[in-house]
Image (tube, rainbow, N blue to C red; front, side, top):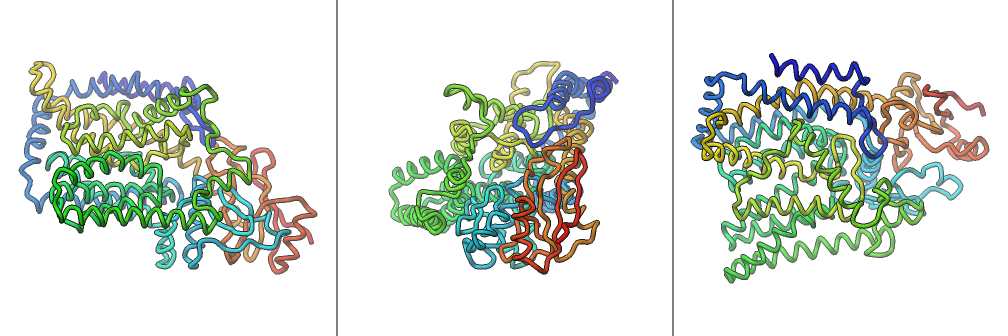
Length: 563
């Protein structure tokens, strides 16, 4: 009863201090969010502990008995559990995408990826820009339109999306990537930490808001996360059989594709693993191992060549990425939102901000990272930890701030490695509690607290963030819903302003969708450049009915433009 009252106090706080509606579109912690998280720690955490203490010894005993049976599961049972978790993850991601995020872009980045997918699907890396007088109407966030029209991001993920375009399943790509990550994570965890940890990671993946929600967006992170775990699995197989050239090749392909998808994360994560594989190669000195290493290096060289060739095709320089070009053309810095303070304070701020968010978002608990210190200190386990920590350190050094959409999204690539370490940490903590021999603290308490924390997430964390995300996605989708309601067809809409920066809770979609590269959209959304300039586009597209869209206060308006 005391535990239930503590959890109830979290919601009572919303009556005293206002609804816990999360703010989007701005960096940092919003006031309502800070109030909720403070109440979640002050009342939610004691509530979890009180409910755990109130559970009967029999209930805790059943959890311990189940925990002890996990290592004895047959290979077939383990595979069946992994297959079931794969299907459930796919369904959870799909339900979140459709039911919560309304199957719409909730960041400008997603609109860019959708544009790049269409360009790549046409067999090109870019399309020629439209005539100079028309070109500015199609300028948009994170796209370049300087004679070549393309998105600024790296080519790996758009190439995967292009396949989705050909098969007409583009929106399903992130969910498929997340689902495929499950069996690979299960197999890798079994080799890293054993059968019990491998089984434990399955419910953690299914119950992690960070993993499920980030995979429900159209961002590249679920694909990058799949490639990272595929690299880990292949590297583990290489460590078992250094002469298996096929696994060297698989490791190189997975890492190379991850590098073409999210280079900073891939390079930082892989650095400890590559050092270890190099040491193993030097130690074994086997001819077959050297052949595999040569294959790995050749794939790495091909990846770098592809990366440089892609940059050269777009910017004319192998070292000039789309980020550099966009920043130069628009006077934009990607460290916008970083702490304005002397070095190393901005890095420390980004690291602490990220860890703070991960501590809530990874599992939705007040202390989601609590199990990490207890993972088994095997060589491979340490490599997984060091690679994950290296990603955190790399972004901290860069001081590029993460946006808060579904947690700190820049780090969603390492959500599964964190969950794998947490699964081992649960096992490790249970073993340590047994060794401590404290009468009032038993392995059953650790397992029961985990189950109680899941219930706490279901009645506090998910309703707060789920409700806020649904409100935000409605705001992001509002312009397109309005167009659908009006039944517009063969039209062009000049967008002057959108609700993202004018209506609470805001959104990270500051700009409208990009037009298709061939301008084949039923309704084209373009920039509003003023009445005189707008007539130029109207003359260029004489068969399209012109409309203007903009905000009047907090109301979104759509009106026809008279010829």
